[in-house]
Length: 359
Ligand SMILES: Nc1ncnc2c1ncn2[C@@H]1O[C@H](COP(=O)(O)OP(=O)(O)O)[C@@H](O)[C@H]1O
Ligand code: SF4
Ligand SMILES: [Mg+2]
Image (cartoon, rainbow, N blue to C red; front, side):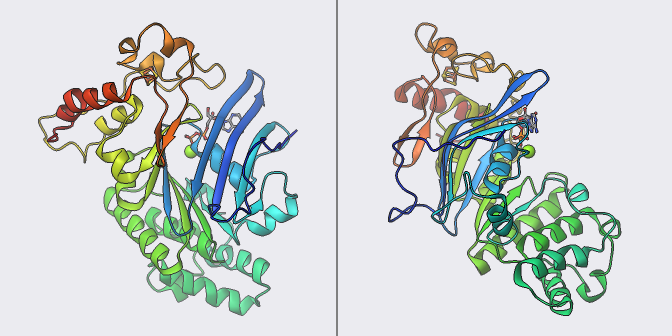
């Protein structure tokens, strides 16, 4: 059963200056045959109108699950969700199914990770873009078809008047991704969630899709959540970044802060594994050792401790025993027991040289 509860002591979403999207103390748990999967574990973040927030983390860190919760797309039969999600002052947590259906595709939309499975092979691309437009606006068939052609043109599909009648398999991977963007944007949503929209594409097409998203955002002022496992991609598109690990936020700040001087050992690991940020070819890439933890049985204390090269620098056994809290100052925060001085000196003396950067 899906249970949605409101944490106590939170400000009302209608408060003046409340962010466009606000997520507070979000927990998402799945009941499975093997036990309870703690996919999202006390996550909070805000997104301002017209801004882009990058959510970054390795596969399985809870990025998609978080955003499917925002859209209200989890199966209530095996999912328990607690926390508070508000969009433009409207509470989504506990909202009736019909309200969420109305908002989805209209006020908020998602570009899914895999365009091949997200588009139905049995309907033309044009029909798949036109249908939600008809449903949400009451437009005629002709108007909706014209809108689909217009959207295909906007996302850079050549000869949209004829390609509108193609089936998805007649489109290349890059064109399908563009069609997915057209589908997501057809009703001018105010919130767009792009879930790894460029992962399956080659580097050139990836850059084109990122440019397209940036242009569309400038035109429409849409707020975007951009999900990726690649910290390198966020530099191009995001204003702020939230780094997720084991269903939690381990670090957040502006894109400049997180890419320039991250505070968390996991973010150091992500930075060290990005080819394009590594200045010299002589500097070998440093993939993060080990693999992401099981969310059925997450590690005690800091969930990153089994993989962390710096845990012995924290006195006692704190990293194993005590969960580090996310401490936020001026919008910037990280969840790690290292002191501010330790983080600064480790980054300057050991991480920066590895990245081949000047201090
Ligand atoms: N419907 C589900 N039932 C059980 N476990 C799930 C379900 N959906 C996702 N998970 C698990 O939740 C965790 C987070 O998944 P996800 O958010 O998809 O990760 P990612 O960060 O790669 O997007 C993973 O361990 C995944 O296996
Ligand atoms: S709390 Fe400890 S284990 Fe976790 S990231 Fe910081 S140093 Fe590493
Ligand atoms: Mg995902």
